[in-house]
Length: 496
Image 1: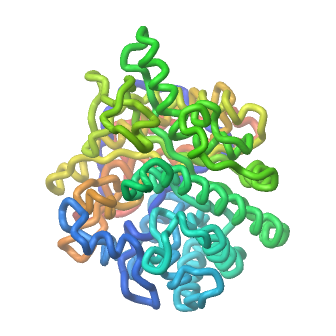
Image 2: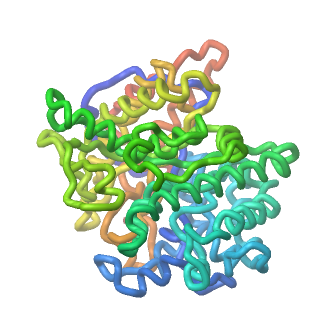
Image 3: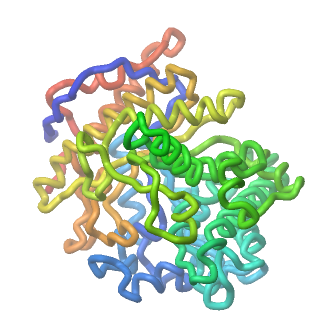
């Protein structure tokens, strides 16, 4: 067995995970699958975008990590490193190529994903499936207007229904959308649309989520016994000058125009009052029936949060979403900056968890899933890639803060690292590395485990041992102390 040195821990903490806590990893279809014109798949919105030259390094998702062909390798890696929970997405343009309600289902895609789910389950890995992770069939834009099309909600409900019908016996955890805020804010707008389109997109996505969840709960959940939710995202905002009231208000406004914009309707059926005051009649309204659907649409609360920002009043935009939000952002000089340009401040994770608990969750019994957490590390060569100390430090310190929030009542039960693999990072292409496993794009997408997956393996292994040793007397897991030895033993020899 090969020994990998473990990065020295900054400090040891008592990390109290409940006995039902589960660790996992996340990926997304377009970012890893490839096979862009195989198996009956149609062109997607991102297929069209990348071939128009919109990616900084000129790469595409045509092949990406080639997981369309190599998913068995990915499953073997997860089994080898003790990972038993896998959050992935399926491709709308693969399953319903034309995208529209009532159009043909691609049975080749159904068979492909069923084989993948069965392969996961056969080795004890639970699939968690996202229906929509940033990509839709291009046809919905070619012959429609995408999110703002009058038929978008029903088209998405149809797609969800197809997935529940064909995969629901194998999949017990569903996410309708991933990070809908990104879809609303980063969607291109014409000058005529700039003041309304982000709000219309959000409204359509929330209704599509609620109606899809309603279909699942009424038609499938009684027999399939699964759960459904949505994955929100937020940065964590602090006033640039805490003694300056306009900066304090800017930090609140930034959060409201991101997290609260989605969470508040899901829990109350209404958009936040601050948005109503600023956006006025440009902000759509929900009917009473729609409010009920929203309020009953979550079996758990899932979200992603990667980094903090300092907020101050001001915008260089004269109209549109950024004008409404009226906030400028920066990083504190003490924060380490990742290869994505994002600040690192572990306590921000605690702060957003506590805020979410006190704002919406403390009066519910909902489990909380951290659907993505991770960091991009600059990896200029193989040595830097495999010795990813900064990723280990990020995960450890953010988990420490998460467990402190759990001690305060936050019911976190699942934590997924973004990502299992280096992958196609949207507009950054293949240049940004988030993976626990390196992918060698010039060596036939060869997978090479990094030090961070050794750390994660040890954490999962020792947690499992603690639970199994004496579960009746188990009170908590000394997680980070348990892996503070000087060497980690990986499960197999590996050639680098």
